[in-house]
Length: 235
Figure 1 (cartoon, rainbow, N blue to C red):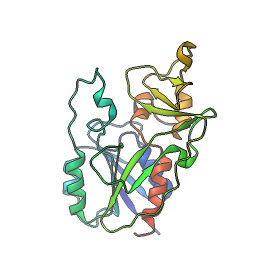
Figure 2 (cartoon, rainbow, N blue to C red):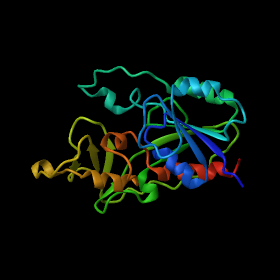
Figure 3 (cartoon, helix red, strand yellow):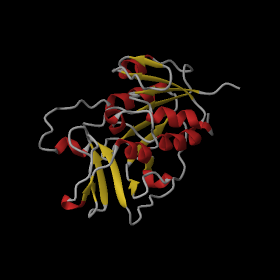
Figure 4 (spheres, helix red, strand yellow):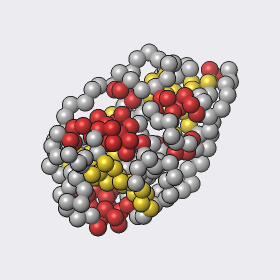
């Protein structure tokens, strides 16, 4: 029996794709930039235009992770000089019109429904000393219901985040949440800061094939494996 086909729009290096593959989908990725580490068939192109050209029956499901910078809290940082386009709004309209079951993923605060709210603590992700507290919203549509999700499990350990590009990754031991961003490095005793290594970041995310910049844009495969298994029940 053939596996259902899923179109992975704005695919980046394939964090979402690997989760869907583990759930039982054959995945094809599309991104406007080359993605040399994408682990499945890949096509370079404009995801919005390709989505608009998809015909019913060509794919069993569509996932879209439009750029989140327009909605991320990082947009308010003092050094954030770039204005980012909102590609989420047009892709929602296009995917609804396809009548194909779809999933849209983005950051908290994005203009979309919160049908699923997932966090690394729901899946036991993290390192020995820090939890992955990477929250993401998922909207699903076109004929499939969503189910209950496990609750967040933030315990007394520090949290670990993975984001950004410019500044060193850091762990604030005195804070409830650990922020890991930019280039990983060594250690520092100042303000209780510990710098995570790239390997520790990969372990926390459940990803071992991406470089630093790719990792900051990824979602853990555990998220889409969970959603993919729900989707398979209605296909």
